[in-house]
Image (cartoon, rainbow, N blue to C red):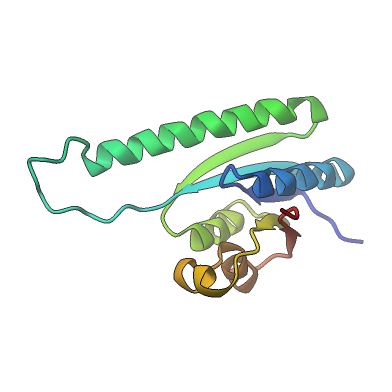
Length: 149
């Protein structure tokens, strides 16, 4: 029998990732596992010095981090009645690689991730975080398709 002690559910705060998070919470309840919610703040490129910039990159990244923490806190509050033990982490950098890194560091037994269903040129330009996680993760990955539009 599959023994899962910790489940990771990455979120970009979209409806698709909220659906995946609900599935992860259900699995965490069934397996009596901890649920780890992760959001990754994308690394911003360094900008050339310009006196016209009002918002400096480090300040902007701190604001993004604080906003992610606020939204993760709201998500954990939404799940607090489920009885699942919850944790949240805000990572930085490439989303796919950071999700896999956190999964390994936290000894996660399962990753539950949403797929957004992008195809064609959008996928070529943007890549697929879910696809990268599936390829790189050392634990099982359950992909949850986005709801039909």
